[in-house]
Length: 292
Image (cartoon, rainbow, N blue to C red):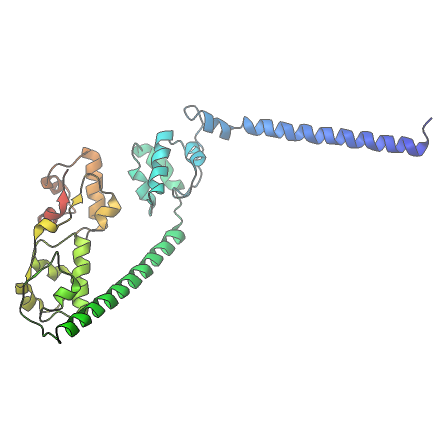
């Protein structure tokens, strides 16, 4: 016979075992319910899934989030490849460039797109600081090179000479009367941004260098157009087009959208359909566009 104290102990053990079984049963049911939830259905069967519209950042959202928003798996793969290559959506409107995204699907998703600008602004500022540091180092390097050349040539004076713009470095430019270190740096930087000069008169377009002295410098400059690096119109992204000094962002976007509509651009005359580009602007771009 068990004593009353022992009966109490047995009762406690039975209660503990029963409670444990109930807890395990609840956890198991929740797990089973989770596996059969609509989110799981979205992942396994996107064709029959119910679209769940929620705010999302296209630069950070994962594949499951895009599936719930109604995007196709191949569209999601394109997004992930674009992001893996360093691509970024800076404005909600940029998401419209996703290949295969219909206008109705885009306008359905547009109110839910949230772009976190703090991250890319920090990256932009960091790149600007790196560029400033790079330019400073280049300036120091070129100054030292120029000083060493002057020393080696016993302080050779500036002279009348002809310099080819697309192969010259800043040290070469310093030997032209009227060109100092700052102006030489600006000429080289603008050449790199353009992809090369096709005419010496393009130095008039260099930002922040408006002065009358160009008239005395241009006769000492030539431009070999065989060195120009052309922009692949049918393959370049909006960002690549917009980086060219002769294109504003809205013009680059218009060219990009026109290419999507036509699937391919064949000639510079195709750009004359765009109201944002004047005839003079199109002709100025002509040497820099590759239609392959």
